[in-house]
Image (cartoon, rainbow, N blue to C red; front, side, top):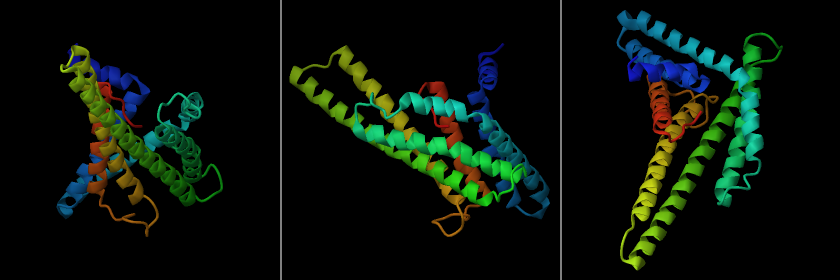
Length: 243
């Protein structure tokens, strides 16, 4: 089996990997459907089918997230108050981030159950609350990455001054500098991904807040596709990814 096909099979066999593929297809279809729909009435049928396909994939991801609470709780519990973190700023940003993520899932579940008429409440308020928690989580991701980049650059400057005093750069020093630069690159990608998702999260909030409800389908799809591709790249490069 070719390596590329084997990698795709391995990706699809894992829950997180399959979710990433579905996410790319969901936003990619939304992007394509939005572009096709703008070309004129002759393309509206294809555009509507692509938008419907995107909507069904989004519903699929929502159903699959019904089973994410326990894994999220296990992660939140293991992290706790982040006493192992060296930096207090990163620590408390992560604590708030975990809290927002933990609240996001049950809020979304209630909204989904309301839409499915399993419970007798209106779903709009719960969708708004879950989207708000997602936005808070993304904002915390951005702040954490910015803080980490500042700390990493401080470490690079410190290593540079140490090497200047020694008058030479050892192999270990080169390796450490390269590793830190790779970490900075990964955090920059995380910021770009979170900013794209945050833009969409604000769009999905009720009208009247910033640019909420103002994005066309193609722009939502473009931002989501960019974020999804960054996440997939980080997974393959070993740099981690956002959910």
